[in-house]
Amino acid sequence: GENVEQHPSTLSVQEGDSAVIKCTYSDSASNYFPWYKQELGKGPQLIIDIRSNVGEKKDQRIAVTLNKTAKHFSLHITETQPEDSAVYFCAASIAFQKLVFGTGTRLLVSP
Amino acid sequence: DVKVTQSSRYLVKRTGEKVFLECVQDMDHENMFWYRQDPGLGLRLIYFSYDVKMKEKGDIPEGYSVSREKKERFSLILESASTNQTSMYLCASSSPGLAGGYEQYFGPGTRLTVT
Image 1: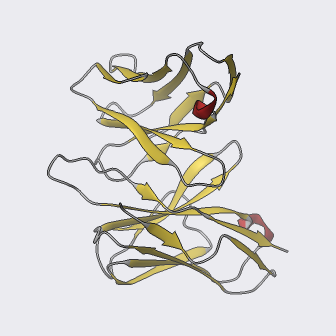
Image 2: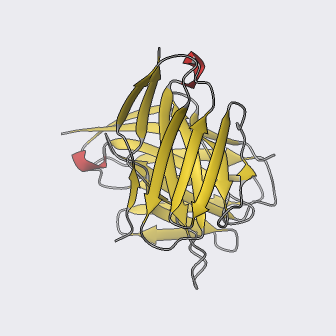
């Protein structure tokens, strides 16, 4: 089955810096790659997603890139703010419905 | 706004007890999911359901069962709770929209402690 690896497990940046989180997947048939943000005491919430027919997608300060050949995708956050501090999960899906999640990255943005 | 609610935020049960975790969504979603979240392991799928009375095993179904008698409600059952089932349990729902979004909406989670 699909396996998703996520790095780093923790990431500390200064406010205003950029943050990058990377994920690799094992099944070349995967075609949907969402990113979820989980704030303390809450369930994960979708922040951006990308499909296999697109190489890059951007939404304000966040962007996701996908390299199908290498089977990896990354989340980029620019101009980080303290409210970006949270746990971020990548995921991959073949059937668009059943997701396999990475192990999570705890992002800490210091003022 | 989609709302997914879970019956309890915190639950403490004893080893061997039968435990019911309830999840309700208010957006008429077809799909519902149960995950457990453990540090360093991310979210792992226990069971999911694509329709009423339908269920499929996820990646870690052992020791769990589910019930979906109504579209809006999906229950997770621990037949005989064990200490290794101490975890955060997350419920989610989704619906294949016209744009094929398949976004999963999560509840706030139930932190279960089995002593």
